[in-house]
Amino acid sequence: MSPPGMRFKSAGFAFAALAVLFLLPAVLPRYYLYLLSLVLVTGLLATSLNLVLGFGGIYQFHHAVFYGAGAYVFALMLMKTGLPAWLAYVSAPAAAALLSLLMGLICIRLSKLYFGMLQISLGSLVWVVVYRWYGFTGGDDGLQGIPVPGALSSTSGAYIFVLAVCLLCLALMYRIVNSPFGRIFQSIRDNPERSAAIGVDVRQHQLIGLVLAGAFAGVAGALFVTVEGSAFPEMLFWTLSLEILVMCLLGGWLTFWGPMLGAAIIVVLRTWVGIYTDYWTLILGVILMLLIYFLPDGVLGRARKKKTIENPVAGAGKV
Amino acid sequence: MLQIEHLRKCFDGFAAVRDASLQVAPGEMVAVIGPNGAGKTTLFNLITGQLTPDSGRLFFKGENIAGLPAHRICRKGISRSFQVVNIFARMTVFENVQAARLSRLGKTRQLFAAACSMAVPQTMEILESVGLADKRDRIGGSLSHGDQKVLEMAIALGVDPDLLILDEPTAGMSPEETAVVLELMKRLNREMGLTILFCEHDMELVFSISQRIMVMQQGRSILEDTPPRVRCDARVQAAYLGGGDVC
Image (cartoon, chains in turn blue, brown):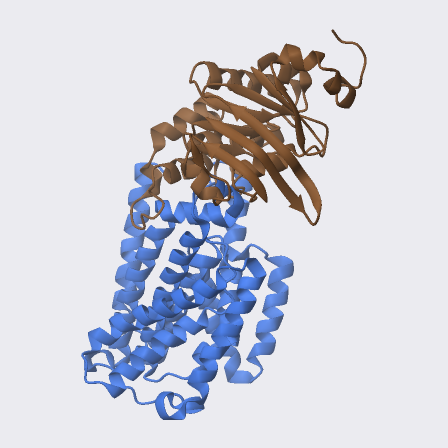
């Protein structure tokens, strides 16, 4: 419970931050605007993963599949049909959610690690189809020159759109995490057996969570295509899934904003490292090792823990 | 209210519960006793759906509930606490009990409502009745063992059950904490009319508060009677109370 003065202050701060974010295209060079768009899209993707990972305790090891599915559905609809763009933007999350439901129905019978392993297998199957089906998906070349709507084809136009959609999605996810469903989802994470004993249909709630996370990943996929103008099979390869998993762990998987922070760190680092070397995965592996040893709760998780130790009541129960 | 007939459960050929029968009438306080490994916890797990019986019948309010999943049995009005502490360790004390309330109210699929203002009075009422109200914002996992056992009971109460099953509610508690739980069980049973089925190793506690006692030995229910008669039964004395002439 924060006193009203503090609440005003934080609302004012949030408003100022929003204003700055929306005004950035006026001052920031195009390259940084593009980088920021990528951070936002990747952050949205990581946050959607964390919805099931950090708040549902589900070992979602191949989340990128839903990101790629959203991207390809969006790209293919724009390229191969004359349907309006807004329909493509709606279809991307819908298709990703459907895929998530199908895979979830199969995987949810297994628990923990086995769930994750089966998901990687099924996801890789989807990847193979995209990777090999030259006639439809472009195979390993991916899809280029996707006709994104004119207003969004400029860097600043895409940035504003991505920012608005990301904020909307984040707000929705924040509400979900703090809703009755979110609370029960966390109780399932902490203790599935106990949750069943208080009358919760564990699998049904896990499925709902998976579908929601898949849908938000699909939105991120469509946004990526909007920024990049292309889609490629690496978007649903398992290494990307690992990368967003690292983002969640790095930022703090038990916090809401952790994955966004983790995504920002990783995306910026990858871009910066890419200038000097091709061995990005090597760097990522080292980060992962250091993380496990020194920051098991992530950056934000660590900060919160410190606060909780200093003041046991204030830090509790916040997301 | 609860009627168990010839329940049986085997694990890899070992019959943890061989032949258990038990009756619990509304408003009763019934204890299950027996030496370690007699099958008490397995019996409770069968009743509340954590395990599925191999054979036998299980009626609750006249309806056969044998083999239903745990969450369905809970919704029919049976709630339980566990022998080993089984709480939501990363959530606050308040959220632990509130989760049970939300489940009971059927609100768990609401995605966009704000949970923080839901079921607050009822949750606080439960926390006050068990004496955890002042620790509402503590993280569940950071409580002392005794408090976690009490929270365990508070979660079970959160779903507003007709039958409350407690698996060794005072295991590992100090005498003071045991006294608090004892008082709570009495109050729930006598003042609020809650039917309670429990198992416990503390014989003094069992004989002081239960109206009837069922004795289990090697997976069988060997006796079901009032405390004075159970105390005098030769089989019980031989099997459980260490022989000797008590009466």
